[in-house]
Image 1: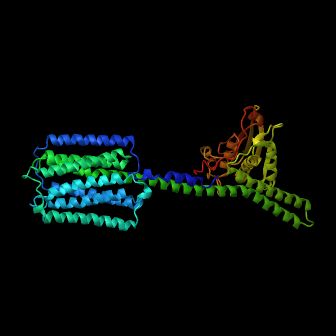
Image 2: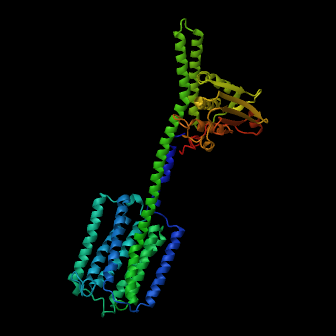
Length: 561
């Protein structure tokens, strides 16, 4: 298995394309088109209602203007900050223009609120004249669609021609300084030269033709921006900006065509359209931040989980090696110890020494085979199975456990069926299954003192297409409620056990197309039985060679990796 596979999967899950990271580059979906149409329809309905009842008198509230302008200021300023943040990542001229526009309108909104009569003072603050707030309103509602128009023109520029030289901090600082300076210059001109400016009101209610002409011009700019937004590879951000432009058009139309005296319904509705125009893009950006935060959190969680799984897989692999190698190492140590004892006799028992050393050599070969078997568990290569004689495997396992059986005072009985057909598979892995089951049985009977310790191994042919192997002991048994979990990895009843032996046994039997089960009454021992298809039945069924070495996920499917 490629050790990078898990990392690549997590990387692909967490690596989002730029088109999915930013509203300005993500193409609008049919759902977004429907949402934009629904929002536009809602604006039309609201506009018609405001126009129909524009002269309806409502209670006077001098605090309404400061409250609404504060909301618009916060919305514009927050939107500008978020857009500048995005510019610091992608350095797009279009985003910089849009961010500067929102920052400029935020400055103008503050001055507009201060200059508005009866908002903070009877005649307004900052040296405002009679027409100052009206001029600020016109400039504000020209600057926003003009900035959106600039964004719409710049957004389709190729990325390799859109870069801006210089540090992000200096560029953003220059934009902030430029927006603030422009706002201050406009404020100074409107206050210092108020008497020189053309009047925008004929009386306290009626607008002069110049105000209507400028408003019409602003609406034309809004219309051009709206067309460019929705016809030139419209993104999700373009649709939200279109909603803001639509609200701006409705605001201009109501204030210039239908708004009557102050505190009429039309007068109040104009400010609410302004709130919608300011908050639409902010709402989209905040929603986008929440979505990205959720995705990034999931990606980080997946990376952490993958890291934990890799550690768990490494622990499992090391535990498998330790579990499988411990037995032949113990046999080697015991055989060499026995050889030393026989050499110390006078005269030395050379026959026993020879037998012990041969057993140690056999255990060394067994350990080498185990290493190869473990390697095969973690490889994804096809290894055709070979004919395997299960009776031969059982005889070899009983021979390798002779000393352990002798020390544990365990009597072994076997009933091996004659003329047993072979199975197709991996001899070393099937030997590991039998070896693990026998070793577990011997260890389980170590605590039995009230009866003779007995181990039974039998094979039989079931019908003509299945071979049954049973390993039965008369130890303390397994609690019935634990039978379903003993094959899970890292679940063990031994004080020093790894909990991997039976999990590996079941995995090997599963890969050979068989089934491993256990039964016990919890008092008089345990029976482990595995059933494998006979080789003849496999050939008749036209089955492919068993591949006992599958992916690591399957090897440790119960580990949780």
